Length: 220
Image (cartoon, rainbow, N blue to C red; front, side, top):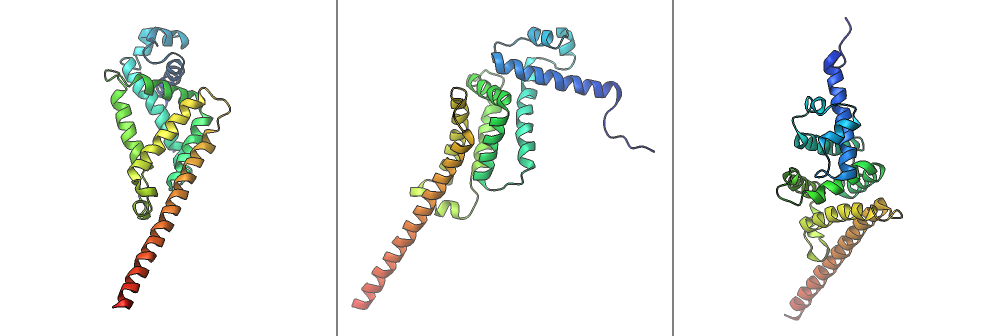
C-alpha cells in the first residue's frame, strides 16, 4: 500500500493558495509598506476577490505575521543546512542570505522602520526579534568575557553585531557597490583582533605583576 507523502486534494490546493498569497503579500509590502498596502490591491494581483483572500486569512494583520514568518523560516532553513556554530560564520552567512534574497530583505527593512510605532501590529514581533538576535549573536565561549576587547562585554559586542548587520542592510538599499558579506566579516575580524590584543595585554600585565612580586620577595 502506497504511503501518503503529504496533503492531497482540496486541502493541498488550499495550502498552495495560502503560500501564493503570502508570497504576493511579501512583494506588495516590500513595494508599498504595510500601512499603504490594501487587501483590495492584493486580491487584484492574485486575480481573486477580497472575500477570496479573506477565506484564507482573517485580516491583513494575520497576513503580516505570516509574511514575517516567511522571512524567518527562510533564514532558519538556510542556516540549518550550514551546521555553523561560531558567531562570525553565522553572521556572515545571514548577511549572504540577505544579499541573495533582496526582496525579503527590503521587506524586512521597510517593516522594521514602520513597526517603530507602538501601535503597529508588528511592533511586538520586532521586540522579540531583537531579543532573539541578541541571544543568537552572543558569544557563549568561556574566553569571551576574559578576552573582551578593552573590557567591552560580550553583550555589547552582540548588540553591535546586530546593529552592524541591520545597518548594512539599510545602506545596501542605497549603495549597489556595498559588499555586505565582506563588511560583516570585517567587523568580526576586528572583534577577534581586539580580543587577541586584549588577551596579550592582559598576559603581559600578569607577567609584570608576577615579576614585581618576585623582585619584592628577593629584597626581603
